Amino acid sequence: MDLPDSVVITEEGPREGFQIEPGPIATADKIALIDALSACGLRRIQVGSFVNPKHVPGWADAEAVMEGFTAREGVEYSALWFNEGGLKRALAFENKLTLAGFISLSASEPFAIRNLNRERLGQLDAMRDYVRVHRQAGVPIAKIIVMAAFGCNFAGDVSPAKVVETVADGLAIAREAGVEVRDVSLADSMGWATPRRVAAAVGAVRERWDDLRIALHLHDTRGQGIACAYEGLRLGVTAFDAAVAGLGGCPFAGQPGAPGNIATEELVLLCEEMGISTGLDIEALIEAGRLAERIVGHRLPSAALRSGTLAAFRRRAA
Amino acid sequence: MDLPDSVVITEEGPREGFQIEPGPIATADKIALIDALSACGLRRIQVGSFVNPKHVPGWADAEAVMEGFTAREGVEYSALWFNEGGLKRALAFENKLTLAGFISLSASEPFAIRNLNRERLGQLDAMRDYVRVHRQAGVPIAKIIVMAAFGCNFAGDVSPAKVVETVADGLAIAREAGVEVRDVSLADSMGWATPRRVAAAVGAVRERWDDLRIALHLHDTRGQGIACAYEGLRLGVTAFDAAVAGLGGCPFAGQPGAPGNIATEELVLLCEEMGISTGLDIEALIEAGRLAERIVGHRLPSAALRSGTLAAFRRRAA
Image 1 (cartoon, rainbow over the protein chains, first blue to last red):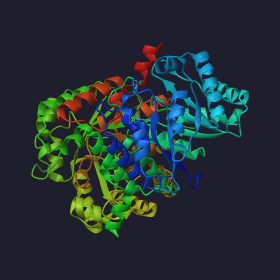
Image 2: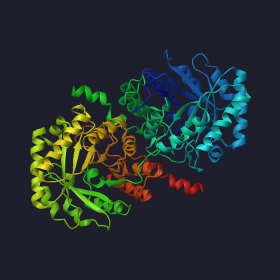
Image 3: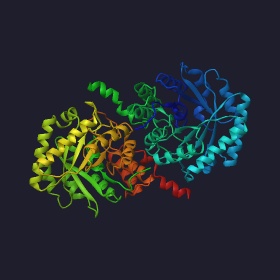
């Protein structure tokens, strides 16, 4: 079995996880989770969003969170924003955060209309502006994110050709701005991916561009997320997003109660148990996941949280 | 991608699911779930256990359940038992049930001691008696079940060589009794399987015996179950056990709250979305899963239960 030796996991729990919770999450709890995650061996943690508090009230305290967490050596902390206002707020933390912009485009136009209130040309215009503003501020554009890359609750199936077209749109925007982008993230925003769709989309992008690095942002909406991650590993993908305890989900997908992102500890278990190094301390990660559950006050989707690691059983058996 | 055209799924929810629940489940509810499952296109449903009510009080009403459900044309209904007493009780329903015995052996001796109160030689003796009693009653021995085929909470890792040894033990018992057995089920009783371990165990059994048909009985204890099922499909496995809504689990595994069997609807989703026919009506299955949740009175692990099928979104999008 030809699998990669190691992968890099970007933890998105703090950012993705709390915005979907109905109740307010205390700033101190957000900070506590980030600090717990910093001790798990993660190299990349997305810690918050600089977004309009009117639209995402759960991140009204972004500044306080950025000030409050303790940055750990060797960990890259990132944040998300969608416009110039957000960028400006993020720039105040350029010493603590690794600032980078993303060209985010939906492969499904109906999703873009619902989620971003923009159709395809509107998306492209907005991203041109976004890239220009980042260039002016000296903030790099790190990657192209293809949302709804495997299917869409509002459009149905999304073809690999549509994914290729969306990546091409993103590359064109980068090129026009004189920016080189080598990383593409295929995001299963609404849980449509299957291993077969992952293989088809990754294959189509690779066939067109053999120099792009592909990352997978998978959701476990229908229980297929870890199987899709496994297919990614088989295809040699080495960059994945995940959220501790399975925090999060897409607030625009219209499926209350459905799991969101794949759980970091389940992805780590998949990798480590197959000999693929993640650099993560899975037991510390499970403890962080339990902290996340205490913070949100309800069960989170991760099965590994309840069953514990195999290592613990191996020690007991030895 | 070279995947099978179709698979056969054995539904074990009614049998596996209710024995682990703390409270008593009403006989009428068990019957209602079986009847709901019968309408989903399943060809095989395991409907109950004839086991000692002192050990498994949840199945003290096995006779009443067998009498109560409505057998549907084209569906094979099976039950489980472990000894002559159980067999005799099952024989009373030979017109309604497809009676068959299984040579069940644990690949992990510590699991057998905990779960069955028997070490290896004790297991073999017990299975010899079991096969003899079935032969005398004219009940066929359908398959060999290898429990703990991928790892064990009490023994740690279980090697493919141990799986082969266990299958060899089972085949020897069958041969001594003049019985031909062609089916082997590899059971991940405690959620240790990964795709790599599935490939190793299936490969080792196939290398030794090229005429055995391998089935997989997977648990989702650590969120790896559907990824393992996908690996099984890749290897050409076409027989799987599953439990609607993810009912069940192993009462002896010592992990309260951890998921049990892979959820039938998540397995069906994996298969059907990749073009592998299951013959099942996934929307009816999800309704049956919701009935199972109402019956047990708490959330069951299946993600697909909450998110619904993709077909529903496709219809809406069209």
